[in-house]
Length: 107
Image 1 (cartoon, helix red, strand yellow):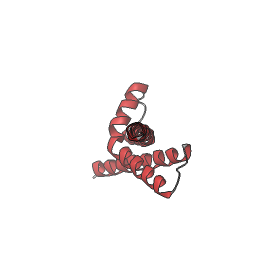
Image 2: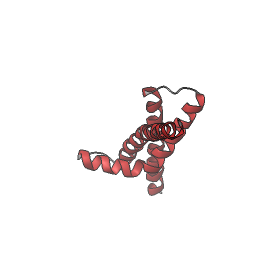
Image 3: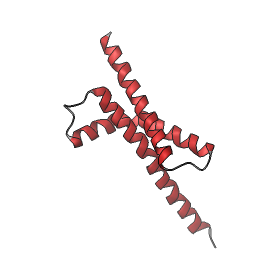
Image 4: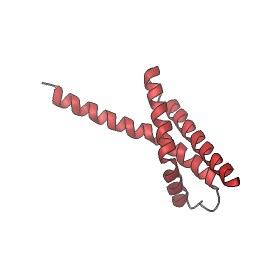
């Protein structure tokens, strides 16, 4: 039963980190409208949930704090970082596509 409780805490931490990272990314660069805000929030949350575990493990290993924090904190850290950086990476890709479309579409 305690394994279930620990798993629930880890998922809760992952979810909280993903939502926090998405909210922070919205605060850094304000969206142009509601649609963009919703898309950014959804992308950030999804990326935080999917990549939060791997990102957290990598971050604690790189920082050398793996022994100092527990699994829930690792997931919280990783999900927030993955969520926050997801929009930056997606924004970079979207700008690259827009530039490519203008260059080939112009006459």
